[in-house]
Figure 1 (cartoon, rainbow, N blue to C red):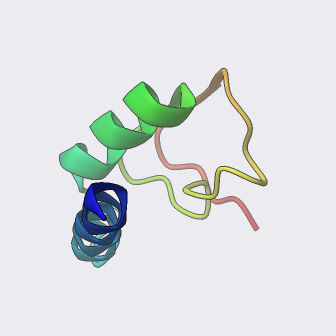
Figure 2: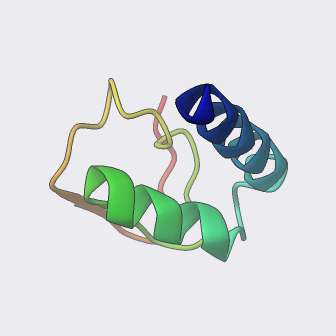
Length: 65
């Protein structure tokens, strides 16, 4: 039960952070700690752990299609 609640809280946080993926520092910190993907500011399209397996560094102003 505790695992289910923790997963729901994590999904809610991720949803809130992904509303502004260009400037969200919390989303970048979470992705760096969880998936070892370091994303620079103003980059988008790279917050998908299946397409972007870590360790990986993505610079600023990158657009991933």
